Length: 126
Image (cartoon, rainbow, N blue to C red; front, side):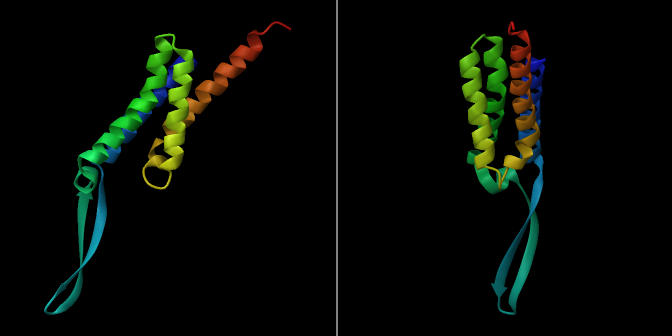
């Protein structure tokens, strides 16, 4: 079950990155000409706004959320936990920009480690 939650976190992060990349946002700019000031409103995609650096950030988020699942499959438990921690910290740091989009993935990641801890506590001999 914990591996399924890690897989869900990876998939949710990939979906979040894709949604951010393909969604548009409204941009408002004030322009001046001979007649005075006027407001220009237009739609802009993430790539138009952030460029290739923005796409790199989305790839990093998706990779950080995918790494715990892939590393756990390779029996690299400690490294899996480290990457999970990095993903959660980066989501927290980006909380006021794109971090909220990754909250479902963060929830699945946290839930995975909670379930793992519960399973380990139940398996310990009394």
